[in-house]
Each structure stands twice: as C-alpha cells, then as structure tokens.
Length: 629
Ligand code: WT7
Image 1 (cartoon, protein in one colour):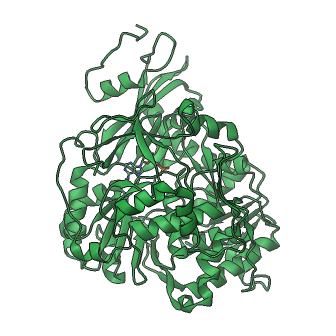
Image 2: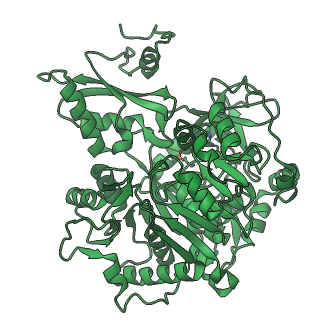
Image 3: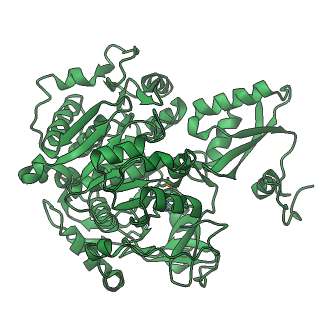
C-alpha cells in the first residue's frame, strides 16, 4: 500500500497465508537478493539459461557505450521462439494459451497449438505485404485475440510493433504513425465498450489522412458495423487469412538479442510522446523471471491481467511473459461493469481464475457498487491479487484484500514503468522490495541516499535486462531524460517518481515528481494536454494540473487564457473538451476547464502549477515570493 497522505500512518501488517508461502517459487528473498547483488551478470545469465537461444551470448552486459547498455551481446534468438515455437514441440501444444470473452458474451479459447498456427498464418500474410525484419508496424485495436496474434506475428518476422492504445485519438495515432514511419497498420472495424461500438476504423482513416505514409491497412471484422474500405489500401483480415499465402508454416526470423522487439509510446515532460524501445533478448529474460517469481506462476494457474494489451502491462504481462512461461491467460474485451457491476467477478467464477492483476483505479471504480456484487459470486479459485499503475490507497487495498481476496490472497503491488519493461519493486509474494538484481535507492537533490521516512527521488543504480534501450529516433532525449540528472555519480536511471522507505526497508511510492500525471492509471504529460489546448484557435496559453480524485487518482484541471477576440462561454469550454478528445483522446479530456485572464507565473515567466494546484484544492499557496505579481 502506498499513499501520500497515509504512508506514514499506516502500520497494518498482513502476513501471506502459510499455504502460499510454503509452495512459493522463492523461499528466501534475502539470500536471492544478496546473491544477485554479489554477481549481477552471473545472476541474469542463470535466468537467461532457462530459455532457448539459437546462439549463446558472448557478453551478458556490455556497458562500453553507457548509458546505451547492451544485454546478451552476440546471442541469437527470437522471443516468439520462446513464447510459442518451443511449446508446440511438447505436451503444452494442447494447453490453453488464451481464454477470451467478448463484451457481448461470445467466447474463444485457443491452445498453444492453435495460437502458434494463427500467428504463423498471419506472419505469412504480413510477409506477403512486404513486411520485413526491421519494418515498424502500427497496431490500433480493441482487446480481441487478433491483437495478440498481430503482435506475435510482427515479432516473429523481426518487425517491431508499435501498439497504440485504442483510447487515443486520430491526432495521437497520426503522430505515432509518423514517428515510427509505419507503412502497415493493423486495426479492426470497431470495439465493444459498454454496449456501444468504438469506431476505431474511422479514427484510422482520419489519422492516415493526416499521416499519409501508411500503404496497407488490415482490418479485423469485430463488430460488423459499416465502415469505409479504401480500394487498394484496406484489406479484411479474414479474407487475407483465407488465401493460400496464409499457410500454417512460417519460420521464425532469428534476430540479435539486441534487435528491437517493439516501440511503445509513452508520455513524458514535453508535448511529444516518447517511443520507448525494447529488444528481444533482455526483455524475454526479465519479463518471464519477474512474472514467475512475483505472481508465483504455476502450471495449473488461470492468470488474468485485466490491463489492455496496448499498454506496457499488456505487452509484458498479457502477451510475452505468460506465453514464455506457458501459462493460461484470460482476456476480456469490454468494461468491468457491463452489463452489471459483477462482470469481472462472473469471469473469475466461470473460468476459475487464480490470479487477478489490475489497477487501483479499477478497484476504486468497482468498490462504488458495493460489496454485494462480488459477494454473490464464487471467488474461491483466487490465490493471488496484483496491483499496478499508481499508488494503491489503503481503502482500495483493504477492500480488494477483503472482498475479492477474502483475506487469504496476498496483494502483489508491483511498481514499474513502460521504460523498465517489467516489475522493479514488488512483493515475492511477501515483501515490497526491489526485485533481485535491481539496485534501487531514494536520493536527495545532491544524490545522497535519504534516511527512512524521508521523501526523495527514486533511482535505479544498476542496469537490468528489460531496461529501455533508447527513445526511438531521439537518443539525446534518452540520455537527457533518464541518465543525466545524477551523472556525476555514475549511470543512475531517473524514474521520475518520488518515494520513501520505511524502517523495515520497504519502499512506498508517492507518485510522479515531474510533469507527468496518472489519471485512472493512464500516463499523461501535462504538456501534452496543454499543447492540445493551445492548438485550438481560441487558446493563447494553457496550464494543466492534476487534482486528487477519489476514483481516478488524479483529475485533470485546465486553465486557459483566450486569444483576443474570443469570449469566455460554457459553449467554448465544451468545444475545448471536444477538441482535446480528438487531439489527444478521451482519456485526456479535462474534468474542468477554467477560462482565466492570467496565470500565476514566476518573474522568469514559468507557470507556477504548484500555486494553481493549491488554489484548486483550497489549500494555502505556500511560498509565493517568486510570483510575478
Ligand atoms: C508510472 C509508470 C508499469 C505498468 C503501468 C504503468 C506509476 C506504476 C505503480 C505502483 C505506485 C505506480 C509510477 C510510475 N506506478 N506502478 N505499483 N505504485 N505507482 O506504466 O504508464 O509507464 O507509468 O506509474 O508513477 O512512474 P506507465
């Protein structure tokens, strides 16, 4: 549990049940952590040896070009070999890889054998469209099995995928297509959400209109509503998959461990999203090791990560790590409260889910409907619960532990980021400490470690295999953003979070201490929303802040100064909200937009968001001696 207001006060202790502890993969965290620390490269080599490689590595970690670290240098591999190809040679071919449920109630199950064949078939389709090793393919889809097939098919060919979350707008999609220079895009006609169709293909059409570099669009028919298909550009997935080229045999492209696996755009402190780049080798080692140990994955588990495949949580812990471990995953298309607030609890009951991994915002959202909804379902199959994305507040933690876990499931609160690729600080399942091989610290502005109970910047002092390798197309930003802050001390990775340690050595994450907001678990840059607002002709200047919100964690408040000739009105506020919906996406629409005549600024002209934040919450404004007037 971690929460700014509560962290120092909460001292409840929940021991994991004996039955869970006894059969856990990791029995002695401290010994393992010490062993990893004593020889970190030997430790990671040992984990890497649990996977198959086409050629072994010459060097585990190459730091000669730091901070451009390289892992398993010289090794040849492909993550899809470890996720699928090797399993179909064993009894695992008959095990379920995926149990999928659509929002309207339709169902699909896929064995490893079937998933492997579908991936082969679609990889052949992509090949026939000219997709080759190194080509970036953009994927913009709902939560359907084909998004997983598409990601794996790209990886199989060594073509990095760039998945754009279906909640992003046409402009956000256009920017990402442009940055990745994708010639092929995979989408669907629409996605089901709360009984309505999200018109993904319309968004794609508009995005390509703005970034006309896409040559081929492959469209999965999901909802069946009429859409525009452009001759010579757009193709139906099911038609391509019925052609002879879509054969069930497709060789996996063997790539270098350091070849790119995917680009995933995430928000930073500027308006331009960063293309976080991950590679095949280190990522497959790190994601599979972390999932196995933190969630204690067993052969018989039915594991449900309720995130979207379009975020890093989905990439690492819906798609790649569970498949590498040969686990059975659940994927559900729609909203947690459709048609009733017990949809998730019904899914757990129906499929006998043993592990549920979700975000505090989802828990808080479902909490509002009361405990009778989960109480009426049989949740006795659950063994472990997970949380990710933002600090989980004590109320949500207790509710989750009591009403879903029935006080017998440990809550695994995993701290990590798009950039880290996998869990960094997590219980195993009994302590919120850094993962073995991860050297975390909390430091002050000068870089000194702070004592327990004191807030500081969370840094990682030692590279790890799933670390991002660069910002796609912008290596300078990579160095600047993540590695320059404490350069005088060495290569310390700056997380952008503040944290504190308690007297037991446990880490408590407080939240971002840069201009990044977590809104309903989504990561958004204040600058992204601000540049969206000023792109409207009426807005001269904008400032965006996050204000604490009971369900969303943070709510977005925006303050805009209008250009000459524009008059403040409720209609204009609505228009600005509409504008943001299309510039960035529905997730970025401010809760409140206030049209103002001035903004609090320092004499050097910097907007004092701190002052806006205090005002919005009716709190004292603190030191305003640097305020312009
Ligand atoms: C930021 C990264 C990594 C999966 C989803 C988020 C916050 C993430 C926790 C947690 C407190 C958390 C941090 C981090 N965060 N997990 N368990 N407790 N805060 O990935 O979108 O890249 O966001 O999410 O602020 O920096 P992301």
